[in-house]
Length: 488
Image (cartoon, rainbow, N blue to C red):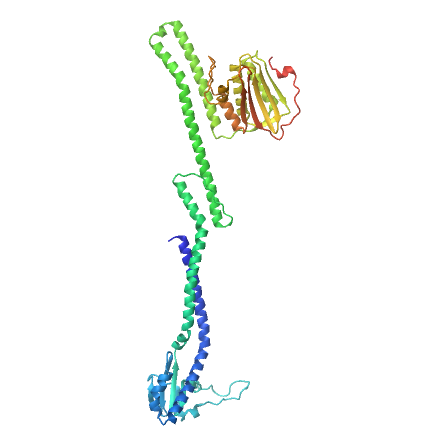
């Protein structure tokens, strides 16, 4: 049985018990009232018995002949009647009914001698005089003196039951109707109240079956059901987030495995081919052997660089939070320029900082992003000047790296940030095709954006946009030319 059915049945049962208690309480009160009413009924029966006996006497009929009619007229449910003659002999009615007061009356010589007189006058204040009277002397309602004899009466509980029967019927009918209405209304309200629980239960079953689509339940009541739905919302959000993280991690793992297997296959194939050549006798020819070993060394270095960059890309793809620090922009760009001059000390490489002092970012990751851009410019824009610039624009810090090299075609510009993409006109320039992909991922982890602007013959500019920290503002640094063109 569902909870709504059980609750509605409980409502109906509680109402039924309440009605039963009320009916019992009111019945007890009515019994107390009807007990006095039953005395009035007996008094009325006395008078009716005297009237019938007087009528039979006027008609010249003895009481013995009229006794059966008197019994039939006065008897009923809850009322027993017996007729005796003046000597106390049974004439008609219930033979088991012979009140003790009748024998008392007969012993005193008649009913006129039985009527008691008060022992002390009315309104007498003080203790009673003499012994307490015999209670049997003060029970005249059980016997009515009539012409030629006595009529005995005895009431039973059935008289009260018969009197209460209409009341009980009405109350029971009302109670049954109220219980049905209570059950129906309780079922409706219970179904509405339990609807969120049923929806949460269905959602949990779907969750258990692998459906991680997040469903949110909004409750305005603020009761226990609202707390349950809020707890479900939090749990479902956590599960959905965990599953999304898992899918992303699996996707990154598959991507990493696919990239590594694809890019490492070529150098491994080259090295394997040269090993086969050496085994077939080339090792006996020193000149050929040296050429082969030199080529294998280059492929080894290429493979080592590839693996190193793949590992860095995998680290950037992980869920590890960046270690954000306050970076001095001037010192940061100066360090990047010095590193570039160590690779090419004859190249014109300069930097400038305009109205920005610090930024909040992971120095290692941001440095890796900028360095990969510079390294690309060193490779693909030979002998071309390289300019680094940091500025502030509309609440953002802009770091740009511009070279005056040959630029990129539109196709190369569109695919520049794709992993392992190296363009169509790179010739014999070695590379992994991961530099700009690493830069893009590092900038994304910093909460920024990276874009590229290039055209054939007009050089290439890569722009990194980051959110400015509260203390980024600073006067423009009027750096001397020899400081801006380090190593020039």
